[in-house]
Image (cartoon, rainbow, N blue to C red):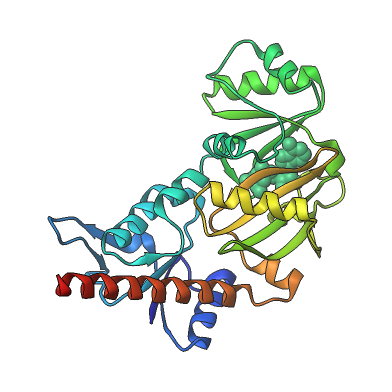
Length: 307
Ligand code: ADP
Ligand code: MG
């Protein structure tokens, strides 16, 4: 098989591990920078050019699209879908997962627990917003932030009011969220591949930091999920239409609360914490899907020629 990893940088840990795993499984790996892909649309002939050369003979694509290039990256993934190439992340699901508000709406509908959250169209009823998440301390998040940047803690009523007003006056889209104090600066990352949790870790924020992101200096620890946490991670992933995801949860008095579902979850933290070959699990999933799809296409062809 020829498997393409869409990534801006072949040297990144996740990208190089995926390439390694593809080659270990005996397949051909190519890294393409999605921002250097040209999308050519024409009746019945969708194609992609990479640095001027037509991309052909690809069996599967593993998108590793950064949050800052979701628009173009998802268009490239969609084009591969048009070319009937299997993509490990569906383009629609990718776009969906990048919008924190839309994600929370979908998760709520699926019955997944989450911190109480408010989103408004720059409402001036700031006190009401604060009341509706149970007062302060509370969390304010930029809708499209990532890696902990754009997540702030407002400790008091005064701080919360002025921060919400400031974000609104800048026309920044934010969500206001109940602060889950019991989480104690820790969160849980469950790595899901094809309906199974293949690895889980606890992330702990550095001293005095409520954000547990590794990019903010957080440390990791191997954990075993409770049944409730595993269920929440799997339902969250499925409801977002993803097959591969990193689900972030907080542990609270009322069970696991899902914060977000990442569609390009990093491999470094989870592989190091679990000492597992997670990249290999992703490639095994891609192999299964490509083989399944091939069998299906062949069957369809046979039925057609019989008719
Ligand atoms: P990002 O996309 O930037 O990672 P998150 O929503 O995952 O944004 O928040 C970053 C971190 O901040 C989380 O991993 C968690 O440790 C902490 N955090 C986020 N929301 C809450 C909350 N409602 N209560 C307590 N801690 C939170
Ligand atoms: Mg996060």
